[in-house]
Image 1 (tube, helix red, strand yellow):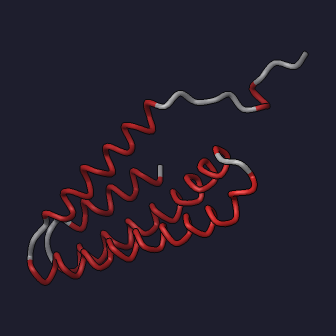
Image 2 (cartoon, one colour):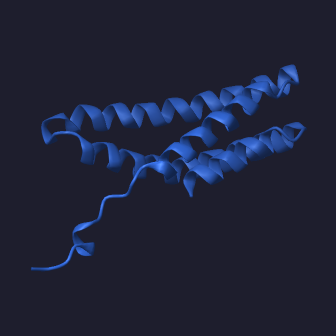
Length: 115
């Protein structure tokens, strides 16, 4: 869901004037805010526990950097009147969504039958 909201925000940023660009980035930030903790939890569940603290910090920094870059691109797109960076971002995020959708889901402990 967060990916879809982030993609929608990026698409709104491509629509035209400065108001839409900044509105799109707010929508993008809301989508990323929902997406990053889910991704962070998934990554941390895939690695050994002794690596959790540095990886947790790296994931938080990565999330901040991604949102900062998109906000910077908003200003660039408005100033230069180009939408190519956003079109590339939409394509890349759609590829991530497709890849995640293809990954088989593991059954949770509550889904497994009791002995």
